[in-house]
Structures are given as structure tokens and as C-alpha cells.
Amino acid sequence: MQQTTAVMPAQSKWQHMLQHEFFPKDRRRDIDGLRALAIIAVVLFHAGWLKGGFVGVDIFVVISGYFMGRSALMQQPFQPARFVCRRLYRLLPALFCMIAIVSASMLWWVLQSDRADIAINGAYALVYLSNFWASGHVGYFQGQAIAYPFLHTWSLSLEMQFYTIIFIMALVLPFTRHRKLAISSIFALSLGYSIYSHVMGDTQGYYNILDRMWQFSMGTMIWIFPRPQLSRALANVLYLLALAVLVGSCLFYVLEFACPSYMMLFPCLAVVGIIMLPQTDVARFTLVPVSPVGVISYSIYLWHWPAIVMANYLLSFQVFGATMAGVLGLVMVISLLSYVFVERVFLDYEGRVTPAVRNRGAVALVAACGLLASVLAYVSYISRVH
Image (tube, rainbow, N blue to C red; front, side, top):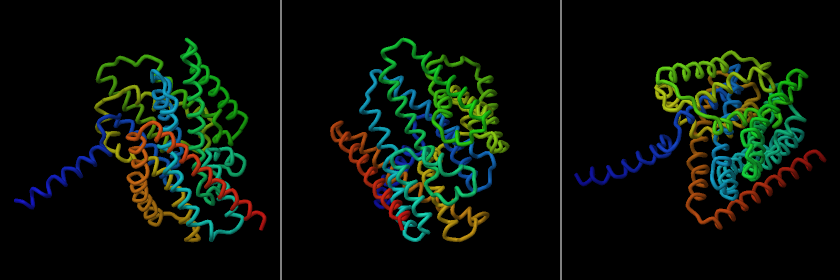
């Protein structure tokens, strides 16, 4: 009896921790499920198993616009330091660890030409300009992409650039009564520019913030326009239809539909529809069960592509089939460790310390990323010189 009494509290504490981390009650679990769908699509696309999986990035972009709209535009009053620190503590530690570990693991044995490109790509990623580097060096869907373990960070750079834009908007918009007009205008101008890029055949627009702002804006606009008042049955039908559009896009879209393309309107509108229809029965049986994967989606995104690239380097052949499945299984383990011991640790620290300590920590994170970026830039320079 004494042994049972001693074990039960520990077990209960463990279960409570898992419940709190992976099945939180204070957040939209169906949106975490959307994140899960997005990251599964991206990973399967990079594995070569899902031809339209690139749509996952577009899903992430709309979700990001939704949450940043709430954090920046809906908070009254807006707290600039809190907003910036939350983003830095959320993103920088895991990115820093991934780039540091991957660089230390492979830069010393790859060819000098590869070392130069990989190192400079890592440096650009740490200062959130990876999309600019990528647009001038490699097409995302071209064969040579497999040589760059940090190429996937272009979307993280895009996201941080959007954070900068919405931060400025949050500072400026209180001085105007035309908030809806401003956000709607950004949406319309960016969508028009994206369609123009598509017509002109600018495939590098895939990396461009101007071609993507309409997707971010679409997520943000959810907060400034009224929610539909629908019956339970109709809400479920629309939710199921939106989910079918997303799954169908991931299954059947081809590379020619990738942004910039008007075809991306359909999955983005589907994401908006799902977000605007919370607590449906369809969500409870489809997206909510996979929400724990969405909780660790950032770490999965960070680690899956470097793992695939390194496997191709080490094995000297294109990884596929059972080997690819093994690589992705390892990615899930690494991603879980990254989430528990890096992401959560820094977010919990940011939430419990005083504002002064929090701000100093944010500066230290930025300085650490800047220092590593400088080291990688130097490695790239030396490799090119020699």
C-alpha cells in the first residue's frame, strides 16, 4: 500500500504534465490540428511521398497571420516589448540550436564549395534573411535544393519579416480609424502582385514577402470582420468541405500551383473557414486528435529537412522508402526533445521572469544568433578563398 501511495502522485503529476503540454485547454486544439496537417504535408512532400505537400507552408502562413493579428492588433493596449520578446523566445533558441548542431556535425567534412554555401545560408537564416539568399541561389523545387540543410528556413525568415511589418502596423494603426481599410488594402495589393508574378512566370516569388503578404493578411482579417452565425449542421458541413479542400490540395496540387499562383486562394480560404468555425463536431473527430503533432510542429519543421539532407550526404544516394521512414522516425524523436528541452524551457522562462530580466535575455538571444551568424559567414568566406 505504501508503495502504491508513493507511485500514484508521481504518475498523476506525469499525466498532468503531458495533458498540459500536448492537450492544453487554453488554446484552439483544432488550430493545433491544422498545424499538424500542415507539418505532415510539408514533411511528406520533402520525403517525396506527397506531391502537393508544399501547401502546408501556405497553411502555416495563414495561421501565423491569424495569431499575430490577435497578438499585435487586438491587444489593448499593445505592448511592444512583450510582443517582441515573446516572438524571440519562441523562435530563436530552437533555431540557434538546430543551426549550431547541424553546422558542427557536417561543415567539417563536406566539400569546400558546399561548406561555403551551407555556412552562408545558415548565417542568413540566423538573421532571418534566408529567403533573400535562397531567391538568388536556388529554386526551391530544383534538384540542388537537397544540398542545403538550411534552405527550409526561408519560410521562417518570411514569417519574421511579417512580424516586423505587423509590429509597425500595431504602432501606427491606433492613430487611424481605418484599420479595416489598411489591412484590406495590403491584402488586395499583395494578391494583385502575386497574380502578376504568376503571369510573368516569376517562380522566385515563392520566397518573396510581397507575394505572401496577402496570405498573412487573410489570417489577420479574421479578427476585423464579423464571424458567421451558422447552425450547428451547416457549420459542420462547411468545416468538412474546407477540410476536404485542404486535403485535396495536398494530394492533387502540382508544383505549378505553388505561390505565386491564384490556385493558392482555395486552400487559404479553407484555412480561414476552419478558423472561423470553432468547436464543430467535425473538428473534434478529425483535427483535434492530431493536435499534439501540431504542438511540436515548429521543432519538426526545423529538424526534418536537415535530417533528410544529411542522410543523403552520408549515404551517398537519394534516400527513399524504408530508409526515409527511419530518418523521419528519428526526426520525430529529435523534435520532441527540441520542444521539451529548448522551446518549452525558454518560453516558460520568459513567462516567469521580470520584464527587465526578460528583455536582457532577449538581447542575449539576439547577440548569440548574431555571433554564430558571424562565425558561419567567416567559415563561408574562408572556404571560398581557399
